[in-house]
Image 1: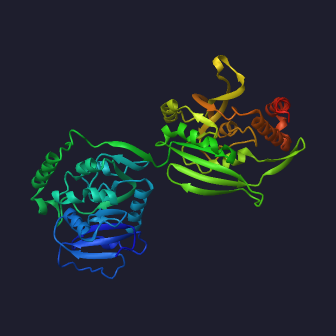
Image 2 (image 1 turned 90 degrees about the horizontal axis):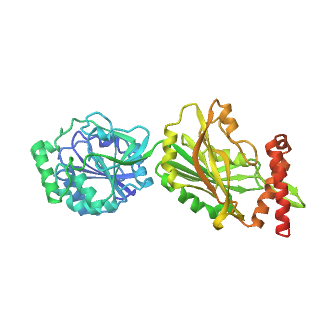
Image 3 (image 1 turned 30 degrees about the vertical axis):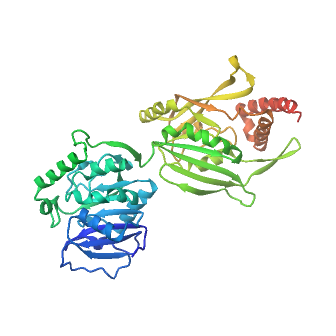
Length: 481
């Protein structure tokens, strides 16, 4: 029968809601195991749907099916027949399983007819990793099914299975808060409920205690429900980095320096690529998940003649703003490929953002520039301190200005916000390069200013041009250029 890589297994009765799940736009097959012989709605004509007749609890029937027909699907959904959902939402469940590499998961539950409010939807999260789930719509990978199938007949009620599966698989459960399903019948109602199968709550509880004792599992008092970690719906912070192919060698260390924040922030990586065959810049998404985006920005460079040499230049602010348009966090931390965030400051950074007054729109941070040819005490390379705004609110009216040595604070103030200072240190290793490499960079910076004469109307760029020109001559002599 296999038509898709995912499978829904459901033990059904005459009141089953399975017809709500079966539409043409699904990414899963369906196995319906009828434990009532007079089921009226036959669905044998549907592609990717099988119907069987067998007696037992939903877990016993799942074990029977896997042992009879094999474990051939990438993932499974064991779905109670009184769960109100649809093919679109089931598709999304399997997609979230794959995207976030979940091993065992459960969608969030509508508060109606729910005995565990812990599984009701949480605000502003996509996935919660927990130590317990319900079993009304449980998803699991092929590997998990292989590990647990032999145990499925040990409890008709399923009480104790979450504790057992946690021990067998050594993986936290995922609660998918972006998909909600509804349990339509009162708890323990129905012909195949634990009342019918175990003789009531007392029988189910007896099964539960037996399972805990047999496999030395913790009781709820010893291991109460807890959220181990979570993936936010809208990240608090987006770390945005633009780079070119010459900078790619720096990317691994930059990513390593921000890895401590990887569960709490989004990372946006945008490679800038010169393309003389286009008129307007274009952004192409290569990969996009909740906490990671990778893209390329194609631009048409300008050609400037500088000191007898034709140089390709481009507008850095335009590139940064193109990358900024991809960011989804409430705040943006702009870093370059050759910069490093000091990992020990991660907690301080997140706490500061969470406590920021509403009238503050950006922070000045401190940058350490490593200079290789000026030796400091004890042989260390000299570190020159600079202050810049790298951390700011993600808003449409806040953007970068100036094609070189870009600034964002002017638009922050124009949007009605104040600036503040934050003791966040960023190491800049990109200056710790050879004189020849430095010479190439300086030439492009000077050429960019020359190509935009209006920049020299400000003292900032006039002074920079004077100092850079002096440095350029020194480097040229040093390198015999």
